[in-house]
Amino acid sequence: MNYRMLGRTGLYVSELCFGAMTFGGEGMFKVVGNQGQAEADALVGRCLDAGINFFDTANVYSNGQSEQMLGKALGERRKDIVLATKVRGRMGPGVNEVGLSRGHILDSVHASLKRLGTDYIDLYQIHGFDPVTPLDETLRALDDLVRQGKVRYLGASNLAAWQLMKALGISEHRGLSRFESLQAYYSIAGRDLERELVPLMKDQQVGLMVWSPLAGGFLSGKFRRDTQGPEGARRTSFDFPPVDRERAWPIIDVMDGIARAHATSVARVALAWLLHQAHVTTIIIGARTAEQLEDNLQAPSLKLTAEQLAALDKASELSPEYPGWMVTRQSQNRAPESK
Image (cartoon, rainbow, N blue to C red; front, top):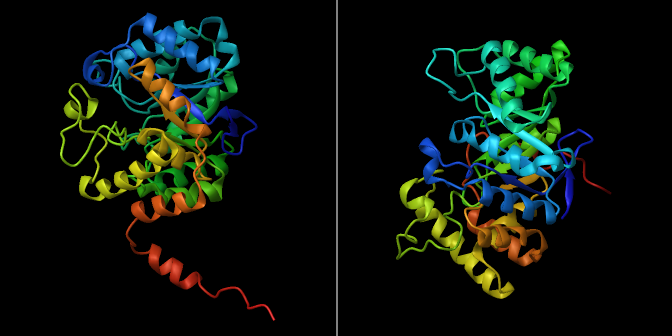
């Protein structure tokens, strides 16, 4: 297993992060996975054996069951790993049991610590933007948690570029702990964040945690133009994240050929492509079965050639959009020519 630094921190995390969203299977998360404690113990144990030191969950996953099960599965090995969870989602029927207010954050962190069976969270992430609560209130509350030792680092998820930059600006101006990572959707079939977020993260040294690297299973190799996908697949009942299928089929065709050349799976090629992207810190993998986990764990060992990477980039490249094409045009010939 290889390890990469999380943003500008001195914290090293495995390039594969295990996501525990499939633990529990309560409410809307039942279609994602419904592993019990025994299955969770086995998957977590295999990840630890493979060198994974980064585990991610959220309080909303199965109404807290995921946190509780992950905490139990880690047990005494918790001290050896980097543990991440999230706050924002609704955790009860009350009008204030949702969002990023100081009240909800403080209530949520104490509940998460109890469920996880730990006295600190390595990476505490906001799960999205809260249009009601001012960012300065959210950031001050999170900074207090860092100063109290309940949280060590802060991260964000699912933010637009302007929202992330505004948060970073407030933190710098007021001397608050800042977001060191962004957890975002990214796949070879969904490269939208390359337009604005990737340049921002490079400039501000913010780490990138990739969620749904296989586009909700669409890039698993089980979906083809002429089939609806295997029975019981998550995509058949939970079509998320959105994928432009007509644009994705040619990408899968290219991955298919590369997979055959390496005698490997299409899923592994999709993960390997992400690991070849310099702006990626870690990829969050989830697994409903031990077989899926084993296949994902082999992705770091798959080294794609320059020609294969070029073919994948060409098949999946984004169409030019303003102001991106103008920025590129005006950047040409900016440096003086050598003589």
